[in-house]
View 1 (cartoon, rainbow, N blue to C red):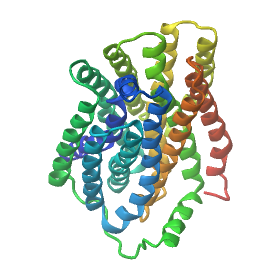
View 2 (view 1 turned 30 degrees about the vertical axis):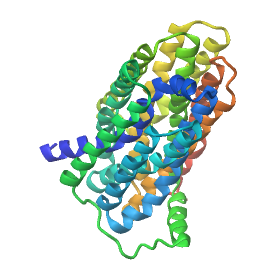
View 3 (view 1 turned 45 degrees about the horizontal axis):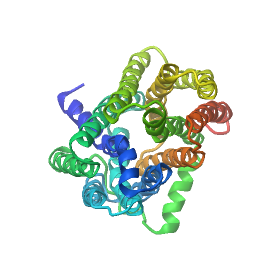
View 4 (view 1 turned 90 degrees about the vertical axis):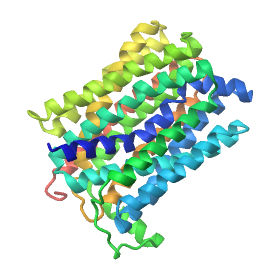
Length: 397
C-alpha cells in the first residue's frame, strides 16, 4: 500500500472518529452533568439518544448531497456545523438545551462517517475495502481509549463544559486537514435530483438489494450491543461498582483496546477466510456470551466477570462492522453515497433503540444494560440466519 493510501486511511479514520469522540469523551461526565443540572441520570442519558437519532437522520441528508456535489464540499459544511454546535453544548444552561445541541452536533459528526464509507467504496475493491475498514477502525479505535481518559482528566481539573471546548478544537484541526489533504474521489453527478420523491426513490432502490439488507441489519444489531454498553456502563460501573471518573475512563479504554485488536485480527483472518464466514462465526459467538452477561447481572457475580464478558462482546464489533460494511457497499457505484448514508442511518436507528431502551428500563441495577446487549446479539444472529440465504438465491443474485 502506497504512502498516499496510508495517509488517506488515517484521515478517513480521523473523520470517522469524530462521532465516537463526541460520545466517548463526555461519558465520564454524565454523573457530573446530572448533578450540575439537578436532573436524573435517565434524562442525561437522553443526550446520547438525541445524538444517535440526529446521527441517523443526518446521514440520510448527506447521502444524496455527496452523490450530487462530490465528497469534499458537503463534508466541510458538516464539520463547520459540528464546530458551532459543540460551542452550543459547552454553553448549555439546562439538560434540555444540551439534548438539543447534541442533536445538532450529530448532524455535523455524521458527515465524516458517510463520506469515509463512500471514499473507501470509490477507491478500493470489496475485499480490500474490508481490510481498509479494519484499518479505519484501528484509527477510530484510539477514540474510545483516549477520549474517556481525557474526559476523566478534564473533569478532575475543570468541569464537563471543557470537554466540549476540547471537541471544538479537535474538529477544527480535522477540518484543516480535510481542506488541505482530502482529494475528491467521487464524480459530481448533476443528474441526481434532490427532490424528496427522487431521494426516496434512490433509497428504495438501495433497500431492494438483498445483500445490503442482510449485512446492514446484522451489523445494526451488533451496533446495538455496543451502544447499549456505551449508554449503560457509566451508571453500572461508576454508580453501582463505585469506579471513579478516571478509573471508568481506563476501563472504557481497555474495551476499546479489545475492539482494536479484533479489527486487526480480522485483517489477518481475511487472508484465509471470506468475510461472510467471519461474520457468521462471530454472530454465533454473541449468543452464549450475551446470556452469561445477563446471568452475571441477575445473580450478581460481581464486577470482574461482567468486565470480561463485556470485553468479549465489544471485541466482536471489530469483526462484524468492517466485513459487513464492505459487503453491504459492494453492489453500489453511482449511488454509493446514498448506500453509505442509508447503511449508517439504519445502524444508528438500532443505536437509538438500544440507548433509549437502556434509559427507559433503568431500574437502578445493571440488568437493563445487559438485557439490551444480550437481546441485540441474539437478534444479530437471527437476522443473519433469515436474510443471508436470500443473498445467494438464484432470484436475487
